[in-house]
Image 1 (cartoon, helix red, strand yellow):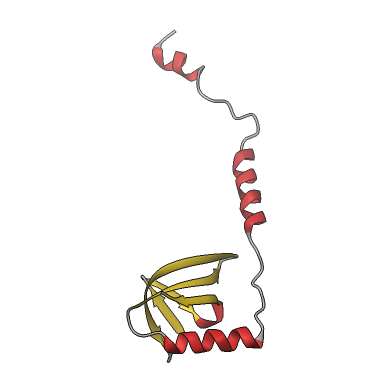
Image 2 (cartoon, helix red, strand yellow; image 1 turned 90 degrees about the vertical axis):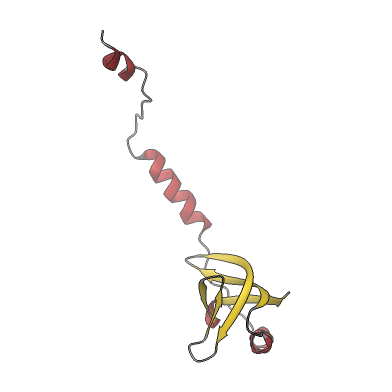
Length: 103
């Protein structure tokens, strides 16, 4: 038996082709959450905090994106004309912000 054929007999065997990928997708689907509603009081507090953010001020933002909540820190640039905050290269719309803290 030549080397190539001998090596093939020791290759991993996947009896159910695509099963592992299907399991990974199912795990990811279970991690996805729905966007939470915020109260008027919380929305007012968020608005006040966003208004007080100065250019390149360090902030921590929790925001909703693609079915998950992400918390990110960095220097912020607020664009009030287009309603977003640019945080370390990530454009976060005001409507997706769940929490913001000035550090």
